[in-house]
Length: 153
Image (cartoon, rainbow, N blue to C red):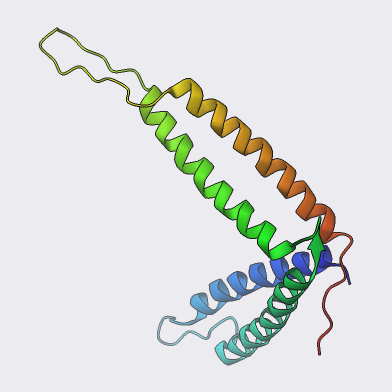
């Protein structure tokens, strides 16, 4: 199985666990005299089985990402870089919103705000980082379709 397939399975198991949570919550408390639509113990057993499968697939994905190299770099390291870039870009975009917003003054007596960051330069930096993020993401996605998932040893 390719790494990309395992990632799809992981996503399906995560969705399944959220669906099971909703189903369990819907039968966890009912009106006196009513019967639950489903047996809570059966749902708990299904949830546990789903979590065991999820644990296994996550372990195998992580083991694969540690072993597999893309351009001589472990995929895990590339994912860490991608996550860090995403966080930094998000923070810089939030700073840009504040720095580039217009302040309305109704009279000269009101407080005047001045920018302490170069908005144009910051936008260029965010654009460069975003381009790096896209390239990195494409490399990771490409490797996901070529790398075999670690076995269940």
